[in-house]
Image (cartoon, rainbow, N blue to C red; front, side, top):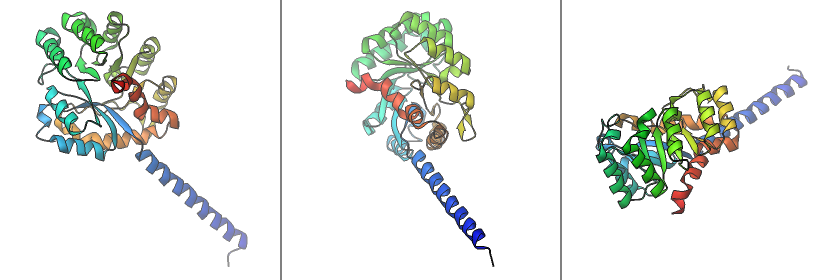
Length: 283
């Protein structure tokens, strides 16, 4: 026969284990219910037949995406998704009419003509994602892009190195810039850029260095804590097959974000995006 004390201790352990398990499950459920805004999606022409508009939107809703920043080559893709789900899609205007223009668009006046005509016709939250590096920002087409961003009061989604971002702010100090992939820069460079440019936000699309297992990497956690209002998540559906990752990416984001303090978790997941979108939402 077991000693009475042993029986009590065994029962207590079972009780405590049950509480911990329940809390863990509850926390996991709550984490997976966290709203997530995906700030880096493309719905370009080669994705339209693989994921027709209704299917693409259904996928985003299945992933419990609160808002989806969408830009496309061509912009017709963005407009199709916006028509399908105006409550979900945030239209961002890309200067590419087709694929293959990443390294040539800034030398083609047609890119600026495309932006000018579309901005006059439709409402957008931003211009981008566009690729521009270093002195590209000094080119006439890029100067025109900055002028259009100022005229229509939209943010810039720049796939750029730190040097290009510096030149954007030099030419347009009031710019609001969402730095695609955080420039693929290291923690120290990102810290330096954010400390000097209060209107610079950074997305974490197509990066994994900030994740350590199921938690935020310690170096990146420190960076997030230092700049809690400046980071956002994104999938980057740069090719049709990337759409298959939207749900998994949202799930992974919720998992590592759950390792952060609750307020910071919500800011990176969706609240920071709302701040960037505030002018667009108020129009």
